[in-house]
Image (cartoon, rainbow, N blue to C red; front, side, top):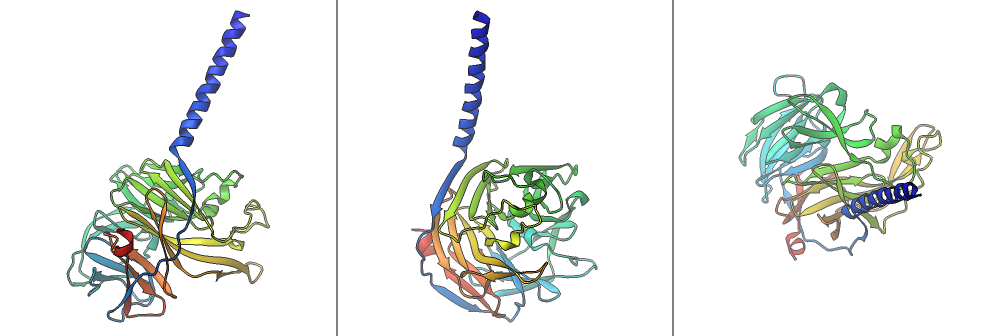
Length: 363
């Protein structure tokens, strides 16, 4: 009888220990529902420049300059100083020759320690750019090769010298971000997928939970925002999720539980967020709502169901500002000081729009 009591006592202790571990894990993750604030009216400048924009799909900024990735011609990057937005010149040609880029991966371009990281098809380049006129002359610090097992490698960011991270689109994994060590070519993965309480087949997880991300300049945290869910996740550099903010008041998503079957298709659903940029103080989300429409047996058309907006959050996952963007806004980037927001427009080839955030962000 005494032996049985000891076994029961030990079993209860194990149950309590497991409960304590789960409770601590839950306490570590701050999961909240947040509501967006009312719209704020922001003053905007229209800054005229040379007619250099054809297809300005993304923008990047460090302490001194702003770079616009332009896919409309064979010259790829336009460089401006900031905050004045004076045109300094261009660099980068598409091609197979020396100093040319084969196929720029726009999701793998970002500033890292004031150095511009550029992901090409199989390589990542690191460039020094100064606040001066440029005519395809730039200083390439180094380049590294992407392991073949990770191609195509998207959303690339350099966490440290041993971890170049991104998403290998063709790789099935129960974790959402992959990495490699440039010295040893060791490959690994980290960051769990979100848990919504229903089963998602392994072969479609990377599609269902597709996201864009950006790394905080001090490299302590990174932010992920999801295409098919109104969700902002903030992770630490070890890959642990520390904050999840579910954003209320946005259109209701369809039921994705049929995914992985013949009738389940992501493109029937709503796309919420298309881009994210971060500074050391704030997270900037491009809200671009669209709804898929089936126009043929295997064809879909994505129709806008609302205007483009900018949702600004702090690093505690709380919304601080909501701004309606000008019609046709294509790409955006905040200044590292959070004083300005710069935007390009699909319909304008010779203007940069500068929003004055400082009166709002510094309140």
